Amino acid sequence: REREQEKQMIKKIFSGMIPPSYKKEPQVLITIVKWAFIGILLRLIFMPVATHSDLISIYGRAFYMMHQHQFSGMTPLLVHYFHVIFLTILKPFMPYSSEIWQWTSRLLGADGRIWMNFVVHPNVYRTLFFLKVPYLLFDGLCALLLLRLFEDQKKGLRAFKFWMVNPVGIFVPYIFGRFEVIPIFFILLSLYYVKKGESILAVLLLGISIATKFYPLLFLL
Image (cartoon, rainbow, N blue to C red):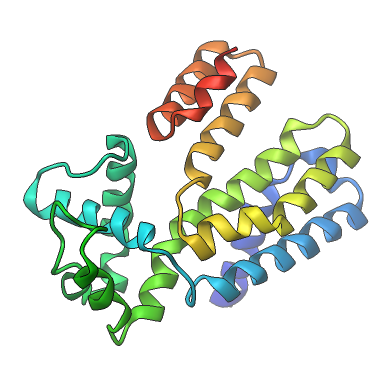
């Protein structure tokens, strides 16, 4: 009975994220679920087996900030705070994390010892998977926002499908290990509130995206 209640709760949460107009026709809802399943499966395939030193660098600097209380690196400060939060949440799933980041220093990313220490660790695949889970959550929210940005249901479904199987969208966070889905999420959320006429909130959210990456400045035009 408890499992059935959990399933119903998850179903209710997922259903609540989908705009009402898409739930009127069962076939449309099935299409969304089907493409979401395909997209998630593609992401899960790459999450534990692929990365670039950028992923290790960004999380390593976050670990450095957590324990040394100092900022290191050229990446905007807000991005590091996001990853500090991610590491804090993921800590119970990675009790060995101090072993992974033991070489963390101001030269993180330029020091080959850090990379080698990471890739030879017995929990490397598990670690890669968990480090990308926050990106997966932001990624999923981006997909759901696309459904809300389009008045035309067909255009919304087309955007959703494209997002779920877009090779670039899969490569950047899950193979290369970049955090691009974070600024993109705040850009889409900003556009959503522009559409609703809430300009102050829209500008605030765009400001958050600019604080993580500089290219959202182009949207100010």
